[in-house]
Image (cartoon, rainbow, N blue to C red):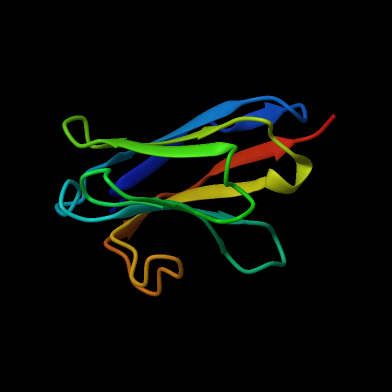
Length: 122
């Protein structure tokens, strides 16, 4: 059964902003890292950003540094990705992952969302 669900995607012009949300019902939320990944048809899944269990540490792919901000609210069991200055190459389906191991690869997780589409185009 689905334990995570993303929302907030859509069509936006280059330079615009979007905030993605992910609600989780996994038992490890609040005690494990969370991450966002992106996938484009025909390409491998790409790491975007991750956050430690308590939010004290954050990691970003070079493509996201300075433009994206990952955050979490453990009380609400929510994960967020704030995106600004969006570029066409940010286009893809964004997935949230619970407890990805290894962090930037997610060979295993405690769960995946079904994804939300982000399209950056003029």
